[in-house]
Length: 119
Image (tube, rainbow, N blue to C red; front, top):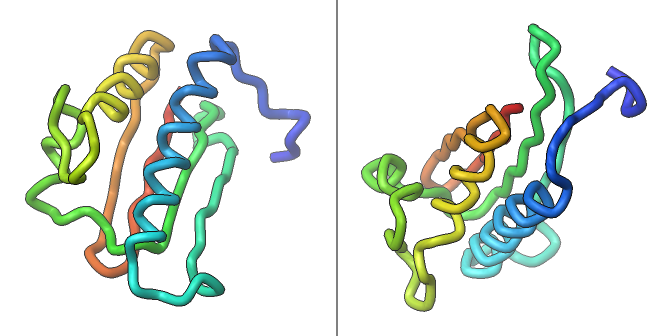
């Protein structure tokens, strides 16, 4: 899919808020990891699934989210960070649902985390 073929009808300010939150979380995840800066990676991808629906992925190669926390990360005020408020992912999920989409997460401890925004 060529970039010009990918169209998305959404509130740009709200989607920007979701992306900033995910990129900030990814940056914090890799910064808190022990790998050298040259090996730290955040990837941002956009495309369409097999049915032509747009998606955006944010993936990092940080420590990953423990499996026992994956179900809780979208709950308001849940956080595993010392200084976190626990509202970023909850608000992001609400924004995606208001756009008729969703946000999915997959993680492998020690390998990283991937968030997929589905529209």
